[in-house]
Image (cartoon, rainbow, N blue to C red; front, side, top):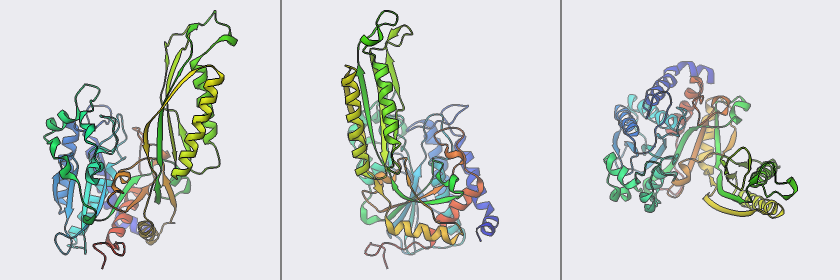
Length: 424
């Protein structure tokens, strides 16, 4: 059945792929895709997405934080909505699928409903969040936090690498920073939040499946570590007398990797940045800074892992006579997807003829903010090699089509949670 539907609806996926390519052509520079928050490239992308929303039969506008927002009314104007969303900003030198696939697929589904003149007992809203990645001002989920009413206004004073404050950047973009609160939505306005996104990992590919049901968005703890020893001449200080900060950091990194290769499913640890000083070939490193990122599907496992890793690093530093500074720089709780939404996504996947496979998300998503005002659900789409945040990021057209058909089926058969404002 799945193969027949894919042939019948081939243009569904092809249209989405064309628009993915059109959006990817909007970038801050030539030769790679970079579209970070409040840049001219982001504004051009916003205008293009708004035009697609209007073509699909939605009313559309840019909200106070820069999110693109479209609304397709239900049978009764003003009804609560099922909100669909993802982000349209990128990392630097990005792939073109991360974020935009969810926005463009949602618009395509609304366009299909509109072509058929179909209205549902609830409204549908599509939101393209303006900043999920947090590249420019080092603070993630800005767009969705504004919608959820949890935006931290202190971020307005943050500055980018050119010294431009977020407040000034908003004004240059044509927005009023004093109006960000107007982007917030009330819980009674939403029936649920649902996001389609590329997996950004290799699990679906290993299962030979185009789509999957997301069970939870893993929490993350990030730490900044600094080890301080004693710099010295590479040729004159005996090995037994050295307080080599880089050698200590290397032992710490090895310990983190070894610890995270445990039986705890979904536990991952990453050291993504390291800097040694003074950084000369013939000088023993006296100071090293590195980052630690630890994620797990449950907060309990993540917090236990962080505590164990910290104890190991402290022991290594003490044994090597290194001073240690260790600071938590970021902490996000694990966000479970609502069971009733997981059930409906699973039903749609099965109805399209695919096996229902459930998996957690190791990457963060806007649902981590949206859960403060709505139950959340997610659909993952297979990406080649599990590659993401890289120009080689790729989704096959057949998988794009499969994801769109699943999302459309969820929308058309959506049943609000019992007791919600839109429940019949």
